[in-house]
Length: 394
View 1 (cartoon, rainbow, N blue to C red):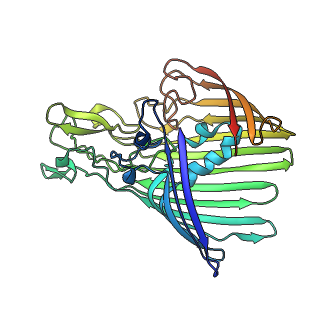
View 2 (tube, rainbow, N blue to C red):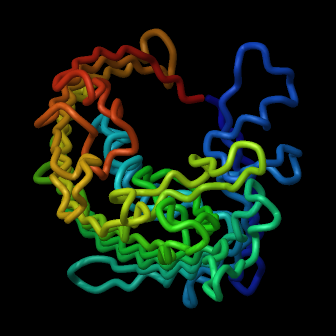
View 3 (spheres, rainbow, N blue to C red):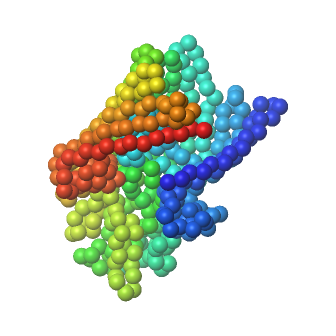
């Protein structure tokens, strides 16, 4: 995986700063040609590949003034993903915590206001408000079903334009960094992959399999996440990291893409926590509570870390088991050492991890996959791993 970023900023004599930034992250196969790099973005939210239409992590412009705050527009990272990643990367749980839950990580078109920093004797406070959207997700849908269709005077719901709002609050002082993030979205393709891009629901162009010609009436999906997380420094050699998260999904029926040869093709929007066939695969509401904690100890050139995540059982009335009855935990211990005697900026690390699922079957709803913690919950309740690596900052 590679990432490249380019940015520029200019501060004027009146203290107004203008900025522009573009970031692209991609995964390159060994046999890719040079320009093929951009055809395999890390998070793919478009079907076309030309560089000018690539799936950027960031592509924004901004303007700021210290006493008025900052306004940015363009493709941006959500705080629900980027800040969770920042908290858990030092304790080796970046993917486990930031890449899970009901948030969206990439906002293809967003406007964000960041307030000035307010300071009093107790600490510093700042907040952000972000509004985001994306186009209707119709590139993979049969063109005859892009708009609402009518059968027996009943409309099929059409593909939606997803909308998202996010509120971010940060407080800091000499001992604590505390952040609150609340994100809510409607009309987006549902997911529990917290790094996912905000992509629209394709609509529900198929009818109930048991009642041909009559639409299921599946409503437009919604989901939300609320997180409280932070760091606490009891002294200069120890840091405690903590987090609690509540995720909620409306549930989404599995939508098919009608095909004249094969009939109803599922998979374009596979749905989320949907029910039985006699109910037209209608989505069921679900909510979960997840926890995260960690400890970092600094001693000379060494850093020792210990971290853990817990994925709770979901609250849902769905009669089909999609993981709502499962829970899991993951633990990670690591050691990192700077090695300036070999090369300035070089560090080496090693980590060991263990995970456990409460039961065999689908993984908890707030995980993006059954093998998210290493072991596949369909076949094994336990998993272990060892990681070694090196970093070089230059």
